[in-house]
Structures are given as C-alpha cells and as structure tokens.
Image 1 (tube, rainbow, N blue to C red):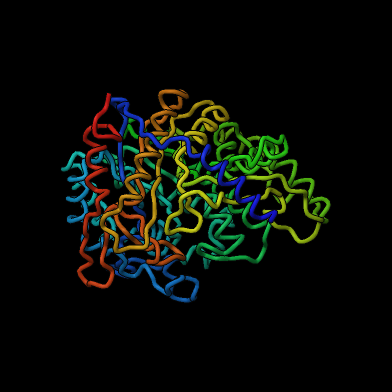
Image 2 (cartoon, rainbow, N blue to C red):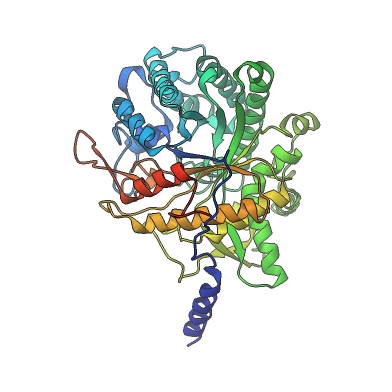
Length: 497
C-alpha cells in the first residue's frame, strides 16, 4: 500500500514536472549554429587499416566480453571508407558545423610524436576537412574521445601518469600544425568525467580498470586537467592568432533535480552537480576543485587512514595555469535525475559514491527510451544551462551532444522528433528568458553507431545503418527531415513568430 501511495505521488508530480509540452515558436538568434556529432571509434571502423595502431577500445573489445552483444568497432559504420558519402549527407542536412574526433592511433600508431607518423591517417582527416570546406561546413574537432593508443596505456598507465601530459600535448600540437587552419573549434577532451569515473572506477568504459576505487579516478582527472591546460596554452600562444579558432572542454551532466523542497535534498542536488560537472568546470573557471569535493574527500581520506587526501592538490602555479583555460564550455546533456539526501556511509573501503553520498533515481512516469538511463525530461536542459550560467559566470556554452535512443529498425522516429522539439524549445527559453549564453546546438548522433558497452543494441542516429549489410547503407529516419527544417528555418515548429 505504501508503494502504491509513493507511486501515485510520483505520478501526480510528473504531471507538473512535464512543463514544456508546447513547443516554443520563437526563432533562434541569427548567428546561432546547428551541428551534428560523431566519434572516431564509434563510426570509422578500419581498426587496423593503412597503418592505424591499436587503441584501448580495440583492445577491450578484442580481449574481453564486456560489450553487451559481443560486438566490436572493427567495422561499425565503415566511415573510414565512406566519408565522402557521409559528408554529402551532412551537406543535405544543412548543418553549420560537424563535430567529429580524431583517432589518435590512426595518426600516431604508437601515440608518440617521435614514433611513426601515419600518412594515410593524416590524408583521411585532410580529405574530411577538404570536403567540409567545399560544402561550407565548419569543423569542430575533438582531440580525445576515449580512444587512447594502447601502447601509451601499456607503457605508463595512460591518463594515470603525468607522462601523459607531454605526450598528449605533442599529439595536439601536431594536430594544430596539420589541420588547424581549417578547424573552427577544438575540443581537448570529451567527457573527462566518463574517462575517469567509468574508465578507472566502475569499469564501464575502456580501459575498464577497477583496481583502486576512490583513488584512480581522482588521479586521472588531475592529469587530464593539467593536460587540457597545457594544450590550451599551446594553442593560445602559437596558433590562435593565425588560425583564429576557439578551444574548450566538453563536460557531461544530467540535471539533478531535488526530489523535494527539503533543504537537505537541495543540498544533495548541488553536491551531485559539483561532483560531476563542477569537478572539471570549477578548475577551468576558478582554478581549483569545488570546495565541497576538497572538504568531503579530504575528511573521509584522513578517517580512512590516508596521510593526505585522495583528491590530489594543485600547486599554486598549476592553479594559475588551469584557471581560464576555455573559450567555450561544451555541454553534453541527455536527461534528468532526481536527487535525495543520503546519510554518509561508515568509513571503510574508499569509493567515489561514498564521497558524494547522494541518492539518485528516476521518476518512473517519465517517458523512456532504448537506454535505461535516458528519460525524456526536456526542462532539464534549461535548468542545467541556467545553473551553469549562474555558477560559472555565464560562459559561452555550446550544447555539444543531445539526443534520443531507439532500438533500431525504426524509420518513423516520431519520439525522437518530439525529443528534439521539446529540448530545443527549452534551449530557446534558456537563451531568451534566462539569458544563458548558448551559441550552438549539436545533435547526437549523425548515424546509428557502436554505442560502447551497449554495442549495437541502442541507436541514436538520425540515419539508420544496416550493420548486417557489408555495404553499411545509410537510410534517413523521419527525424532527418525535421532536423533539416530546424537548420534551415532556425525554428523548432513549422511556423515561427
């Protein structure tokens, strides 16, 4: 009976929480840009083609059974051989920019600048940039979207070692030299929270190392932030003046909605936001980690018997080096999660979830998708955008990923269209009603692809890909026409004001 009452309260609440069922009929600003995104390992295939080296995702999919359908990215969409066809589809979509990532091991098979430089890999990305230029589409290039060359992982532990900083900087500088004159936006790292928390804590992403929970993920983040800052300063000092691009960091977060108006639930929401988004945003804006992280991890570390905090400490010079290292912040946002106060667990084995100590859950009445974690909660994108504005001095904010998953084989994807319409309506409200400095929006994803440990069981694409056909044909879903109309009219509805 108590459960029924609880669910009834949730149901009634959900009627009020679904605030934006009517789409906004205002136009986006004239200079607002629309783009679409992919990632190298998820679409390229050609895993060992033309001299490409092995990366940590090649290694994980070949050496383990962690992927749900036991698939790999060896071929995936085969974009390595179909890039011209794909870029023609991009032109027809009418996007202003294309966000894609470089496969580090395709350019530098061992990861090192003093090793072999793979000319075939360089030509592949040069051809993409030439086609984009020909079609009048700007390039947003991510340097690191999770596919570290395996040799760097083997040699020194990858992003757990400060050696990574200089190795990454050398790779980035090579990319600036080779491609920078044709790249409008650079992203150093995609979702460092996922790189560190899932790569080195819960094992849900490569390299899936779980040896030191509560420790390795903080070491990883510390190294990533210093590497990001070094690359930012290299671009700022040597390339910005001539190449005239921008460089930033892409961070992911849900909106964490308090489960009630109780001050403890409000505090839990803020803490969860700071332990995820603030973990990386606070250093690049203010120079150091959020105080709540410093205090909680430090206090628990001492009680656990550590001599110092498990959260590494920046030196004064590192604080100054990291502070201000962004021209824009990229936001990857898909869904909203409810938060509730949770009493701290007893001191024992370290774990990051114990450091946070927040209960997170979903409203069971929110609309779902093919991904268990992705509920359709359009107003969340407005609330997280406003929170970023208020917390981090209203930076230039680019929505770098936002999208909806289906199970595949669905060409009339009306639910995806509704998702985009309602989320984009809330972006409009964030811009016009809340004064958030959002300058661009990027749909995820261009086409169905390899979805990491979910393999091919979840599909985010506007274009369907037949993975059982060796030719990997692309078929437009209904959302293609909808998104084309948005890019053409800057309206989310057929008739704008």
